[in-house]
Image (spheres, each protein chain N blue to C red):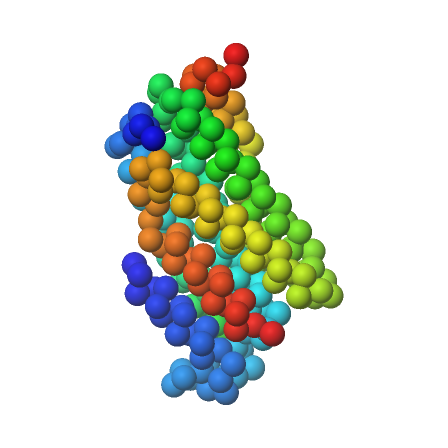
Length: 68
Length: 147
């Protein structure tokens, strides 16, 4: 498989932003388990909105020539 | 940041104990089995959000993707949808507390799909953070310990 064409700087920034959510989630868990915060489910149960993924996928498939 | 996961695992392992492995937290404040499954749900949801962001950023940054890459992106998208749908199925069961076993099954199914998406993202050269992988492991551990 060929390497994807990436804007590495943008991707690294996005990854850093995204990965920061995981420690935040665990901080919430710690806080809750120690009686100092709400249940994580109350604040963290948002499921991803994949509509942007669907749009980007359609665009990518067109760029690749897979779809007309 | 991995230490946070190790600490979380230790806390989870201690949760059923009366005093929480040396913690001063009263036993009444420790999560019960249902709350533990809710926590698994939440961590899985956060990990899924991260995977979705990595996926969408990769697609947006792929200026001249090959057909093969577009096919892989399509498969990842299907897996992310399947993972989200499975979690969405689990939510009402968690809210009513009526069918915790089904909720656990749905969360496990979601994690399986998320793991497959994670592997594909790594295969195309993306360095998905270890935290995401650890979070998915954590969900499995939490569900394994909940009754």
